[in-house]
Image (cartoon, rainbow, N blue to C red; front, top):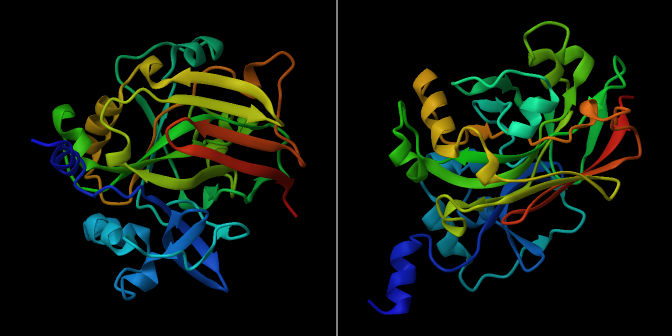
Length: 300
């Protein structure tokens, strides 16, 4: 098999790199692909057949979307575009807690045999470049650098060996947490779901660009200072294990999101604690994906 034939068989979506975004422009929401600093409006290019990125994934139309990019110029600039969370309307956002040893130790938690999961809601998120909102009820707004997995192929009780065919792509995630509300009871959900406290973006890198079991490096920076650093090799529960586990609870659908856990170094466990405050810039970087950047503001 010659090299070009091997590449095509390994990468069924073709040779064009594809970073997919969701956006708002001129009062309308849409989705597109980032090319050379610009954006191809895939919603328009595909004849308006798909309402959003989640719909595109549900129709298993990534190959068709990539084909539209061949020889195509950007429709408008990426700079200044209002980006939404990569999937603005996910059916489920499963978040894995306590999935790096250093974070388990710094929180004085007990390592459990099964992964710890909680749910986030869609409007607890903002897109790249948008302001994370510190609520009036608390000053304890913390950062958590994470890698997000976006599901493409639906499935229930997915075997670990079959997980990779169900992944549409990957993104950066900031599981922003209001710590005092998280600690009100043993249930974490209130502190994890304040309006517009998490970041999701800037885009989805399709799974063909990041082969199965690729080691990725995850970093957070607050105002340019590195706060967290880890690699996916350091996860306690692997990506395969996480998807197999949550898909046992309920079927995974296209556009569902799994957020895979944060390493040690969160603000709450520093001495003194470091909280995000208005005017701050928080960055989450994954070497194979890009940089998610958000400012912080107080709720008006």
